[in-house]
Amino acid sequence: MSSVDVQSTDPRKQFWKRLLRCFSINGETITCFGCEEEDTPFFTSTPISYGYTIAYDDSIDDFLNYDENSLLLTRQSSFIHSIAQLELSDGKPDSDRGIMEMNFSLVKEVEIAGIQIWKSIEDINHVQISKHDEYTIPDYIFMSLYEAAQGVERLLKIIIEMMNYRNTSFDKKHIDKLLFGHNHCAMFDLISKNKNVSLKPKSKELLNTLYKFYSEARYNRFHYNKNNVLEVELLRRFGQDISEEDFDEKIKHQYGKALGNIAQTLYKLIIDISHELNIYVYEIHSESVAKYALNKYFGNDLYETLKRIERSKKEFIWYLIRCGKEHLSSKMIENIEQLPFESCYIPDLIQSLITNKNSCSSLHDIVSDEYEEMIENNKPKWLERIETIDYVIGNPYLILNYDEDSELYDEDDY
Image 1: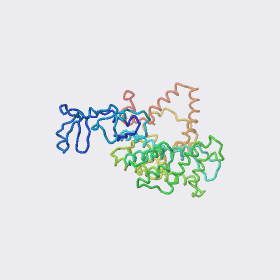
Image 2 (image 1 turned 90 degrees about the horizontal axis):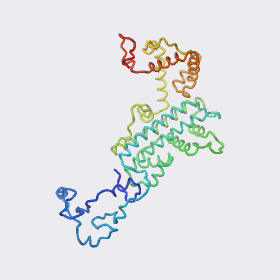
Image 3 (image 1 turned 180 degrees about the vertical axis):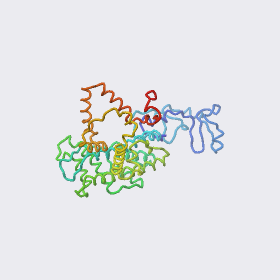
C-alpha cells in the first residue's frame, strides 16, 4: 500500500480521492455523514465498545452555511478543506509505488543484476590483459566493466528503493536524482550513511572505477580523445599495485574478489531489508547464474568460481575421453563416423569449448567446412546425421527410458 501524499500529481497516488467517504474521525468522535435514521457504514456497537462517540453531520446550520466550493467542517481534515482538493490532478508517475508492486518488480531486477555481474566475469576471462601493452584489445574489457557497472548499479538502486519505504526523512528529489542517474559512489554513500554496511578498500576502488567507466569511458570514442582505450587504462589503474609478472591472472582474481565483495555485501543488505519489510526481493531462481555472483556460498572470488566451473567441464571431458564408448549415445550412433578433427587442433578446441572463447568460433569454422563438403556429396545423408545427433546427444529422456534387456531405443516411446 502507498501512503497518502496530498501534494502528489502521480495518477497512482490519487487513489484516495476516489474512495467513498462515509465518516470522519476526530479524536474519540466518529462523525457519520448523513442522518441518524440512515444506516451507518459500520456497526456502531463496535466503535462504541472501544470508547468512541458516534455523531452525525446533518445539522441544519451546517447546510445553511454550506459553500459549494468548500467542505462541511465535519468532512474536512488537516489537509483537505475544499472540494477542489479532491479533484484529480494531471501529472507523471514518480519513483514511489506500492510495496507489493515494488516486491514483484525488484525481485526480477536482483536476478538481472546478478546475471550481469556474472557475465562481467565471463567477459574478463576472454581477454589477455597486460600491464603495459598498448595493443591490448578493449572489447571484452569494455563489456566486462559495462556489465559490472550496470549490475552493481541495479543492486544499489534496489536498496535505495527499499530503504525509501523505511525512511520518510529522505529528500525525495535527491532520491529520484540517484535512481535516474548513474553515480555509483553517491548511491553507496547514501546507503552507508543509513545502514551499517562497508566495503573493503579494493572494492571501494572498483566501485569508483565502475562509476568513472560509466560516466567517462562508455562513449569515449564518439568524440576526439587522446586515449581511445580508456576502459583498459581504468582497469590498469585498478591493478596498479600488481607486479608485471603474471599480471593477467592476478588482476582477474583481484577484480573477481572486489566485485564479489560488492555484489555479496549489497545482496546481504537486500536480504536484511526484505526481512524488515516482510517481502521477498532477494529470491533467485535456483538455475540462474546470478547465484554465483550474489551468494557467498560459492566463494567471494568470482573469478576463482569461474575457474572451478571450468575445471568441472574438464573433468566431464576427461570422463568422455575415458568412458565415452560405453555411453548409451555412443552405442546408438556408432554407425555415424566422427568428423576428422586434426589432432594438433584438439587442445585449442577443448580450451575454447571450456571457456566459450569467441563463442567457439574456431570449432564452428571446422565443423562448417566439413558440413559444406557433406552437403555437396550427399545432402540426404547429412540431414540424417544432423537429425540423429540432435536427437541422441544431450537427450535426458534416452537415459531415463533405456532398458538394457530391450532394443537400444524405440521411437514410439518418444
